[in-house]
Length: 332
Image (cartoon, rainbow, N blue to C red; front, side):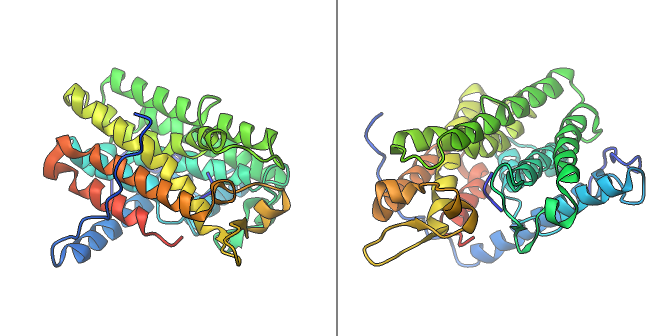
């Protein structure tokens, strides 16, 4: 929650063990593979941008202010689209095409966007800026921001229920809906945020922070992988389990690394948060509890665990492996 082409489908606007695993450095790719991976990421990002644009309501239809704000929050400064990328990489691992999961990728990104809009509100993180642009409640107003979040969440479920690009089987649609509902509800993202709000200003042990992170951020990362698997129910059970084993440590690593990217390394390595919203509300970042070196080691161990879970897929999981390595070395 902290992370600040083509397709068919119907547009909403009517237009269309206790011991940590061994830590290994990311494997070196063959010459040229970095360029190929970068091109793949760019292609996936372009695809999801277009797909989101097609499925969001038009800004000139009523209620036009709400629709314009929805588009502003999703399409302007939308970030790297990590969750759709994971969904696309996962679909490759189970033998599906991007077109078969595109609407699910949009749904998970809409849910992520809704969470950011609500996170930025004065009652939550009180953040005036999101990725270099005014937050929704600053660009519009607080009431509109609340409604934008509500509408984006609703649209995510509408896509899972009605988008023509998804598999038509009712059981698949139902499974996708349940997965997303669990990921963003009280047992997932909202519950994790509630734990965060309830303990602000308090020093929490590392285990408690990890449990909160697994819900607040990890749940949506995890469901991005599991929704791809849900679109391929014919995939062997051990492969479904392998994807779950991949996604769980990945989600936790992603949030701890986000902490590391948001701390200032003061003399002595204090790990004090530098983002104004986090510092002002008294949050203790993960590195401040464990120390920077231990937090970095934890991230590497979690990424190694996720990487190892992909062994049953062989080369089919190469896109996911590349994504894992990319996330490990990201700088934002």
